[in-house]
Image 1 (cartoon, rainbow over the protein chains, first blue to last red):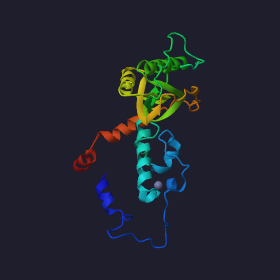
Image 2 (image 1 turned 180 degrees about the horizontal axis):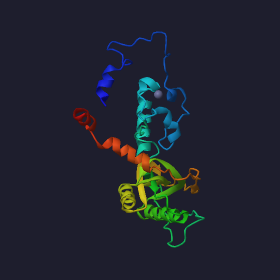
Image 3 (image 1 turned 90 degrees about the horizontal axis):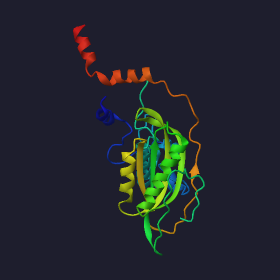
Image 4 (image 1 turned 135 degrees about the vertical axis):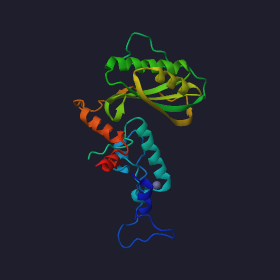
Length: 95
Length: 169
Ligand SMILES: [Zn+2]
């Protein structure tokens, strides 16, 4: 496993100088900014599952579209939920 | 403190909340602790009342207990994949959290706990709420993870085994 190498090769990391939205992928808007009734709560593990991958990693905000503030809150909630075993830290891979 | 709790698990009398001078503000916290799944309902209730007494003895005020019931955990806690979660909302000041967590840490029945501060200057008049008891997850047969777990350990165990085999072949 070589996570760093993998990261360096990722295509979806924009080169310095800004990103191109070549027709695909619309501008994402932070869903928590858009809807103030949505709460971020570490006790609501099911709601937080939207923001973790199948392997239980936190989805980066460039994918989820969360703004910085709400991404921080989501990440904190996920970490709190993990401590209580309401969310997994990682998922064993079945091969 | 004028709250009459319906199902006090008898044995020890539960200590009521202290009286606070008018205008007192306290911090508000919530602590969630996970108890071993084999604990019977009565034992969970007794544990809950012990925590309530402790909060009151330490000059805090228990607002509400919610027993979430037995839930599946997302990873094993002390080799089990279920636990009974209890949530408590309370007011208090410096030292109370440390004292509660010290007690939780010492108990063999507690497999996890976590405290979060909810507010800084909350009126000590905040009303006490009725305790709540939730159903938890539906009972499922315990996972038979033996082989699976052993398989996983095999993977983690031998680093570089493959290379050696290749060379000797
Ligand atoms: Zn936002």
